[in-house]
Structure formats: structure tokens, C-alpha cells
Length: 354
Ligand code: SF4
Ligand code: ZN
Ligand code: ZN
Image (cartoon, rainbow, N blue to C red):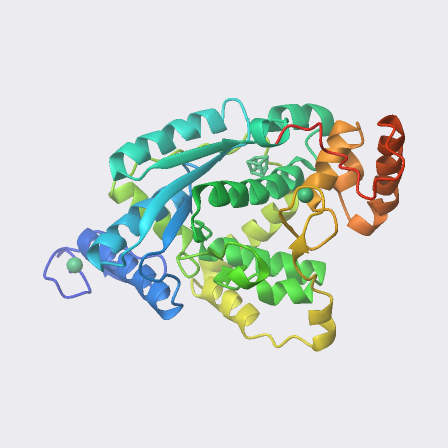
């Protein structure tokens, strides 16, 4: 049987079938197609300006490892003029994050990009190991997600970067669209497809997703053929069942029609949201406890931390309004304990290490 030729017309033999398009390509033409698509995404969405200082959220997993490699490659090839730094969060998960951070440290040396690591232990006084010991394996990812989001912001502020890029890929975004449909969360349904969230105007460091249109299967294929050094073990505390259902659904649909992933993202992008739904989106302000960005008086991380420190971990789960009363009561108690009678805003968390 004659060898199949690369459909890009380079004259070489095809070595793979591209998951996104089904094209038979040689490795070199696949690399070029993959990299160029990310470059076009970056240019079209005007993600960066010359001179930007960009933190790459790095976990050591395939997405962020490929992102770090691609950011370096494109920055050099197209002379974006960016200064890059790797930013990692150590959630304190023994047997998982400690090993994956070793991978990030090797990536730092391989790609010659400096690395900053921040830990939950230092920021909040809690590791995920300790949190799971207290809250069990049901809501642990909610704590972890809220803390990570803020930790990335804190790290970015400490570094003085003006953009953060994350390795969220097309499959992740399509999954989030499906999850928001299942929850009936119309306002988030549209916002979750945004390539950049947060802006200087609302006091947040913008976060971008250069892999918004990049398929997970292609990221794996790219990492595999390029022999990039990444960590592939799943988190030992990852029972996120709800996302798991959305994930399996996307994978099933992809098998039947690969373009479904992009089509789901386009559906979210093209929704027009009524003003009523938009008005339900919280406006950004700052947390009165920690000063970081928040849509409530007290940010979710601070509410959760109060719950953990007071032995009431369910405080931060679910609708924040439900827990406002409990939180206020705790704040009142705290005032009495500290003998502070008239202080308007007692910092409940002042004893917690940050
Ligand atoms: Fe954190 Fe859950 Fe992700 Fe593990 S799976 S790192 S606990 S969010
Ligand atoms: Zn080729
Ligand atoms: Zn706060």
C-alpha cells in the first residue's frame, strides 16, 4: 500500500491524523498548523501589547507546559516583545502537586523562563491536604478553585505583571458552556467564552486564554511528538462529578463530529443576553477583609477561610447570601472576643496567615 502523503503538500509522508480537521499531516506541518493557529488567535484578539509582562499559570500539566513552550516559541518567532514568567500555585497536595512542581522547575530550566511559586500554606495557613481532612472529598474543588483564583492574582501582583495567561483549552471552555446551560446560568454562559476576562478598569489583572480554540487532543499530540516534559497524573482529590459529566459528553460528541467543540464555543459567543440577565452579573469591587478583587463585600476566599478557621467549612459553599447571617454573627462574636466594641470593620481574618 503506498504511503499517504502529507496533505499540506510538503512532499513528506503523513505521520498523523489531525484531530481537529481529520487532515493527514507530517509532524512538521502539524507543528506549524498548531502554532500558527494559536498565533492567529493571539493576533486576532489582540491579546498582548509590546512590552507586556506576562505570567503563565503553570501547573506542570500538559496544557500549561505546552502553553509555556508555545508562548516562548511565538514570542521569539514573531517578536511579540513580551517578558515571560512562570507562576505556579502549590495547593499542598502530597503526592500530586509536589511532583508536578518538580516538572515546572525543569520547564523553568528547559525554557529559560523564571518561576515564582506561591503556596496555599503561606497565603491562607491551610494546605489542600488539611482542607480535605476537614471538609472531606465533596466540596474540596470549590475551596481549591476559589483559593487558586485569588492566589494567581496575588502572585501576579507580587510579580508586577500586567497579564496572566492560562492553559484553558477549547474542550475546557465547551465543558463550561455545557455546565452553565445545565445550571441555567445565562449570564455566565456568555461570559465563560470570553478570551480575556478582567480588565485594568475594574482593578483586575486581565487573564487570557490563548488556547481558546485549541483542542485538547492536539495539545496532547503536540506534547507527545515534541517530547515535552509534563506531568500527567490526575489530582488525587478530583471527584468533580459535575464537570466529569460535561467532560464525557463533550468527548462523546467529539467522536461523532469533531467540529462540535468549536460549535459549542461559537454558540456561547453568539448568544445575546437580555439586560435582565446581565443585571444579575455581580459588579466587581474589592474585599473589605483582604483588599483583593471581589463582587461581594467580603470575597469568597475570605468567607471560606473564616469557615475553615471556625470549624464551619460549609460557610463558603453555595449562595453567599445564605451565609451572610452566619458570617455577620461570627464577626460580631469576634468583636466581643477581642473586646473591640465600636470598630466598624473588625478584620475577622487578621490572625490568619496570608
Ligand atoms: Fe484542586 Fe480539585 Fe483540581 Fe485537585 S482536582 S487540584 S483539589 S481543584
Ligand atoms: Zn508536511
Ligand atoms: Zn477577601
